Length: 337
Image (cartoon, rainbow, N blue to C red):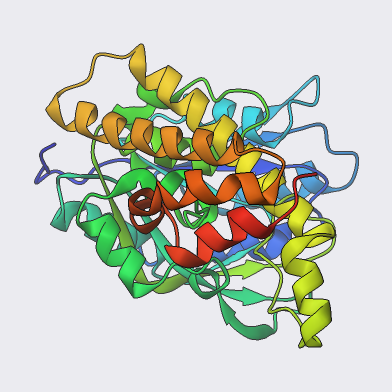
């Protein structure tokens, strides 16, 4: 992928649905960017409040074009984003939620990163988490998603199977090259658009994390997807044991593994049908290796005792694809739902 000396056209894909409570603030933050977009595409998913009125007021107040699409039927978040992405005419596409606040340099810094790294097809950033009153809660997105410096280093080294097990690419911080759009659309039903875009685009270009917050990401009760909840409260030893071996936490553990397995299956199936270069084949191979590991874990026998031998026989997999002995112990001890 090559950079151009000509300024690339930048589109914003914004999806709305009954967003009147916070939308005006988000639109104001787009209007105040140090690098303004060349167009904003708004796809509304059947709002019944003042959302469209707010969008039209915004469109009348800015110098760049605002394309407004009113869905006749509710598409849902991911399919609505798919529609908005298809309608963007820019060389670069920035994704936007309806309820965040962008830092003034969000677009400028993202475009700068893509120019500095022409091999990158998608960039994403950290974000400050705020509440309903625009107050920072003292936590950032990457902290909440445990996107540590070690994991950032792995990503920069081209270890992309991280994308199958961790959800640290937040769509509201993403800017990607439109030339990659056809590789990742359509978005399969029941999957979140940002995790899908990241996993597929990684087979065609680098993903670059920007080590600074570029948005204020809002957490509130009505949003569809938020950051993970905070740290677990301290427990007595016997209570902690119960959460390891059984109970709701154990059910969530196996349910999450089941979800990750299904996600890896559809990603691998999709990429297998594509024409991939050497890089893409390498990424697909790493995805397939992780898929074999996830399939092994999910097929472990019900009896904890019967799991010991197979798990110990795959410790090298646990070291490569999970948290080593800690994950191996959990797979042995946690009862299956």
